Length: 303
Image (cartoon, rainbow, N blue to C red):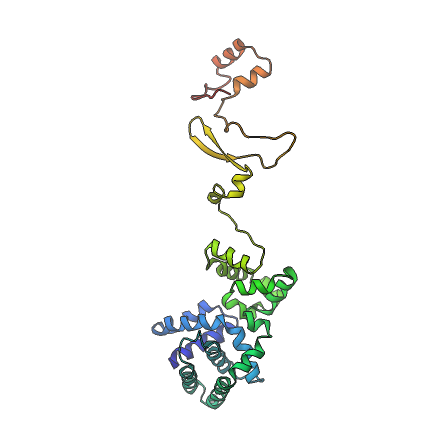
């Protein structure tokens, strides 16, 4: 396990230096990659909390790899209910990992983690006041939520989890986010994609966050609001049979509009239009015989 923690610290250090977690895990030895990935994902979900705790425990930043190891251990151990291993086992194995890589800092790692176990309740309570620790979202994201959703930003943080991007320093500034806008969008899409649409809507609705689904085309035909408002209606087509088509998108109380027939076949209403223009039946027949009107529709419909 100490080896997995060491590789997890490698991944965390790489992410904090600006590398993607995917690339960082790809550099991990194949035989340890699955276990490292599992631990890394859990660490990233609590990295904001771990950073706040480490700052409480050691005000000066240790060397980058040692810091990454401490963050990894704190992220895994801070919530006893979610910890993947017993807390003392995690601490012991983190100390072993330090012995393998940074022997000069073994005592420091041991002291920091043992102190956390002794003062866990008070330390966690103090970091609850830190929004980054509480919701594991980066400060730039929290500021934007406060601005755009002043009444709902906290609920939104609780309802979704942005994953590793939440603690990624590359996104700490607006310039960094604009430069990596594709990654920002990917993280948001990945966060919401973890839930079925109905569950995500329920989570956001329960949190009091205004929301609505982005529907696929096929979903529209079964949407109760679409059907109730006549936005889509069913008609009988002369060759295709029953089919859905767009209704009238607006409603007028004095002069209500309806869709009474489907799109015409090629040439279906040619004779009707010519009659309205004043052509006599004989003239229309002559034009058709001369080929000026094209072929007679194969399945006309009486209007």
